Length: 381
Image (cartoon, rainbow, N blue to C red; front, side, top):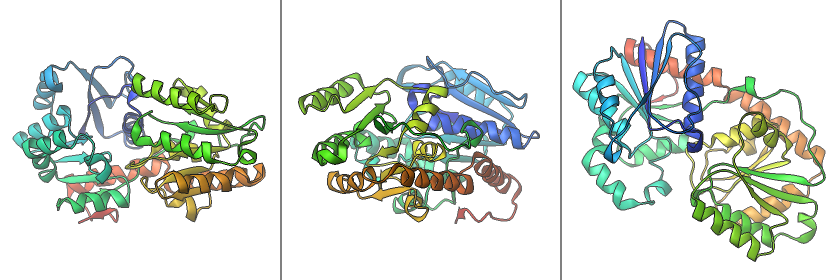
């Protein structure tokens, strides 16, 4: 079985999709040494990885021309002996080029929209997306052998747009081997609330700042917010100006991105993780926080109803008022209560979102497409 994955970038600055795709491929290569998987992507300054560790894994970095097209990518796919193609993301040229090659060579292909068909996402730069849908994107999606969603709400969004393809509902996974299974000692002077993600208006950081301003002074005592991430410099400066204008610069700190061991320490030191997002197809940082024994507050723009069923955080409506209520509730709990909630979160990730379980499902999906095996339970026909 020979599979090629295509994603526009795996640069460290691009966030969750780059991490989840590379980790997924690594785990599939580990589970099945009889499969060959190649990842095709465009060149970037700081890719997450430069190669896979096993001989059956390949990684190609391609030059790109105007409009994001890559002649190198197109020729590589056309000239390779591939059984199945799997593209990640929409609106950009690499996955469109992949779909065209697949259609020309009559090769089955999968597209993972990565949340880009969610209602909120479609309202951003809507004219560009309307044009792309009419020119190529709708056709690429319609002709896909299968679409891959990471949560039930994404399945619903895809169906609402009229696509009738089979949809595989397989979540993103977490490589638990990278997250210690010991309960961390959380710092208390001060207690830390963490936001760690791409710094973008979609993430709801302005709602977090406003909610923090509205909290009772006693609630905020001995708490700080650490905001880690990269993003547009002008937007980050705008947030810093807002924080300073509200005299919150001693309580809310915007910091540069962290990676590797430093990032893991930040996750484990936090008493609470907050992602007040408007829209996420999954939210890998939520899973990483839970794997680090840190309870989470996120919105119903992200598919994390498990936070409530496993008692490891709050799953709230989008907006300032629900966020104020949730922060007031969780920030006033005793540290040992939050530690217990964090342990619940770790159990949730072990039960449902381990990378091994997710990779096994993806291999099952590939087998179903290529060998016409029994339809897996996660397929929505």
